[in-house]
Image (cartoon, rainbow, N blue to C red; front, side, top):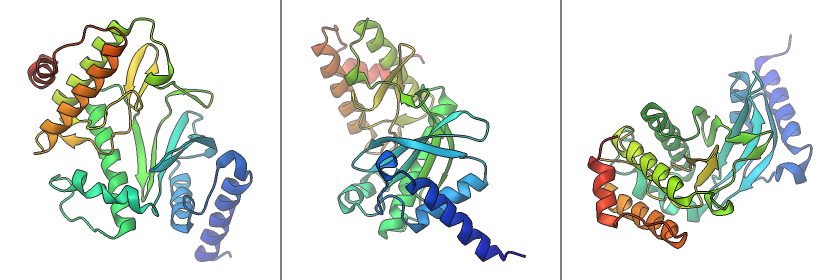
Length: 258
């Protein structure tokens, strides 16, 4: 009978082979798929959260994002944070400290990235509970986050910056509604909202990349909301939209009806 340790080793090797069978397609590197990460992917496969990882979608400064499928055939996005990027880890503590959800924070590099992954999962849960148009969280483990895929047949929804809008005024109204819902219903401020982390799907904004998002009652939340408002207003003003006054929009996000 195959011993449990031998079976785990065999499955680990099979997972590694699956991800490395086409290195160019998957853009696999040791910085992404080290052994703990491969073992994490294996466990998520065993938990039936992932069936297959089919290809790379994006390689960013903080993470790789892959397209895959769940056992029921639905499309998923698998975000794998780097555990070796010192520059990325430098700014993490600012967005974790003071959050009551994470009271005992281990500051060694790998643990910090694992906490960051958990934070994004928790923020996506709050977004889902509040009715925000964002990817739905499925599961996380270590530095791996599994969520619903926004797009179809492996082609992701375009970013706001990539797509000429048919009606910028209408989209601006929809986006500010999402900002208000995120604040009032989910209790979050995004903190890095821009045309780079808003997708356009079915003519609606989809907010993503919420790892740095903070609870609305966090001391840093007002400055983060101010940043989001200024960034969004600047972008849409360039498109010819008659935007709200910055202060007026901030107050509306915080106190207007949602």
